[in-house]
Image 1 (cartoon, rainbow, N blue to C red):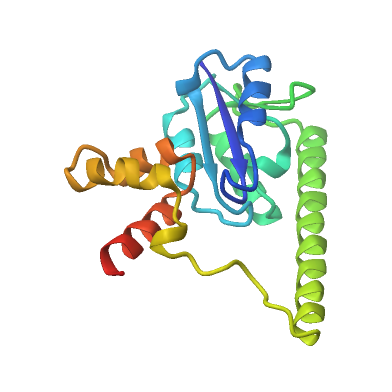
Image 2: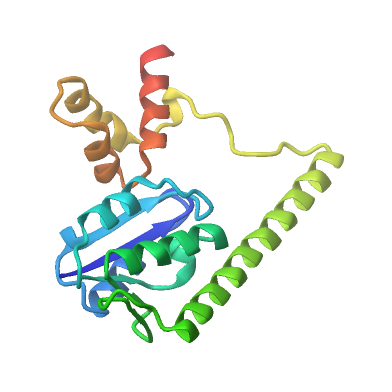
Length: 199
């Protein structure tokens, strides 16, 4: 079986995860139901969909991702993922051009070194971006500008939320299904629900 994993760090209003899904289909993931996707930070190592994917995949299965940074932007977490791939005897396909075949329970040392090197660069890129953002925020604050996103209120929440909120209240949707319909993280859904119930 071939599965895909897609991830964006921000919600659908700022990043479109469908490009990754299309690429995963082109890389051999046949069914939409075989693509596990989420809007979560690449530094977070307890992501629900990634965990579900590794729990589902069995020996000999292939996991496809478009690039290492979609799996994680943490070198430590990447080492844990590679160990899981090895322990479960999986095949990891990165962008269709790099294949980590652990179906025999072993990993070629050169391959492992290459993937870990990519992980180092992915983490470094993320740290550089974070550093620049923090510097920009300090500069904006010094000039008296507002920093961060505007506060979310009932009036500013997406119309799509209200369309399905009643179904959630009537127990026709759980939070995971709600998030999938909204194309956002469960954290965002919990935030919207909290605002809807308390304002």
